[in-house]
Image 1: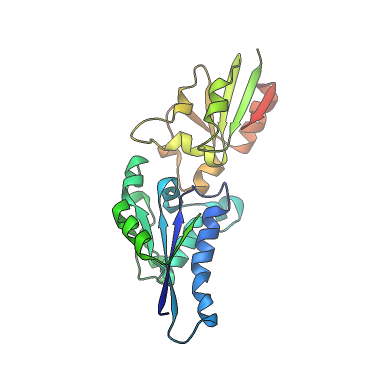
Image 2: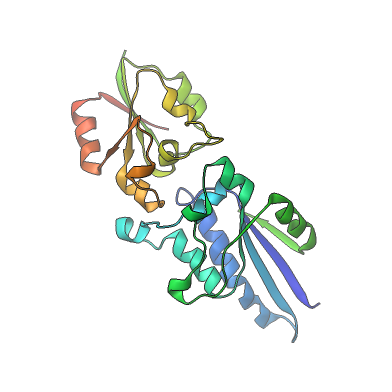
Length: 137
Length: 100
């Protein structure tokens, strides 16, 4: 079977619903499914933020300080830490007046090497076409 | 006519109800994901919520900072308030509340 590619697509803003958080935790946990697969087979997840979902990626979230809950930011950084690609739609950022300087671009403070990729929707569309499973949140 | 405090906690989907609401005095308190109305300029424009004629606009500081925004991002039409300030608004300024 080889690699099973999964694309987690987050289209809702953070906090009001559990949806974006579930996408992140599912994406992070998805690779554990490999224990049920044959040797050499793997799960390859990517998480992308589109539409209002790009608001999840705004940096300096103070959820822990204010409400004592882990922030969506910390989950996104956890993705980068485990080399799980995080993509953000550039057109939707522009529509909402967000610039890269407003966004989580890396998780260097956690020791991650992978960085957030800001991509066009055309790139996301290509990925949607190539993956085996699409999961919308 | 009533004095109405409207708690707006979503960014989408509730505008229809909101647009139809009328009150002698209206306070719009942006909480939860409603705070995006105070900080996001979609396609360079203010949220249509902020064009409600005669309304006073407030945004809850805690919900703003939770989402990574600060006072510097807030539209000049909107006043930043704490939970305590909201209690004062409810007790002193408005007779009824609507959570939409």
